[in-house]
Length: 365
Image 1 (cartoon, rainbow, N blue to C red):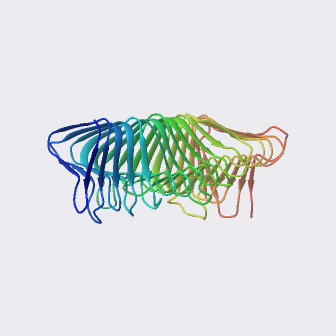
Image 2: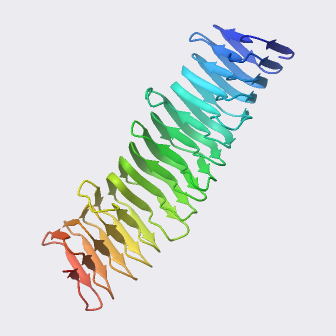
Image 3: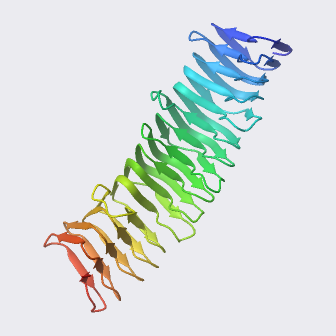
């Protein structure tokens, strides 16, 4: 409830039972030790006061930890809080990494729930899992996770994002980086970037709701070798100069979405490559200032519509397949522009129309 518990060369607290920490200071000056270790059987609630470490982690949790208030700080080159197999719920309070070169929260293993706290760091703010430890679960339900100069989240394991804001002000870093082992589901809340991509995916990404935004000169979402499924929510590129979705490498499936953009709305591939796959089903894609879809890979459109008021509806460098009742429409340019060597296959039920009386399908020689 008050007072000071400190250690010069070791842990300040090792907990195997129950700790209710409502005030006072718990600290350690040890060069290689954490301040508090909460063992598997331990339950620790921080509702006031502070936990500080001069050089190591402030807290390592293997049991149950809840933070309702208070402050947790490390002055060393280490994450402030480490969840190492336990269950963590963080509602409020302040978490500081004063060197600003490690994560505030490192969910190495176990489950961490973000429930309302505002987390801000200069470096990566939250790391979930590791390249050799992919079992961790991070649930983001409310609050803010933001970074000034790096990614806000690096995810090697599983993230369920249903509420709250994840953001980055970094000029050259993405807001969320999802490596090959990562699985990230966005079902609410928002992911924003002030200058770069909001999301870079090398693993598995599913978007069913929520908002993804970039204010920079970059695509909002980049699939960089992973598998993406987008079937709900809103994607914004506020500068109107880069695609909303860029499937650079891998597979992107988009189902039931309506995108309107002043630039090219979708880009599939960066160079001719059949393994770069984009599947659109029941989507309505519109560009008011450029080509609606630019394709260098394998693009399949089933039902839905693609339109542009300023350029080709589809600029195809490799392979396009049109199925069902897809409607491809434009007024003043060739509706589909097939570059030399590109192929187009379409069902008889598909309509490709040039409403200005011009060329519907142009095949460059």
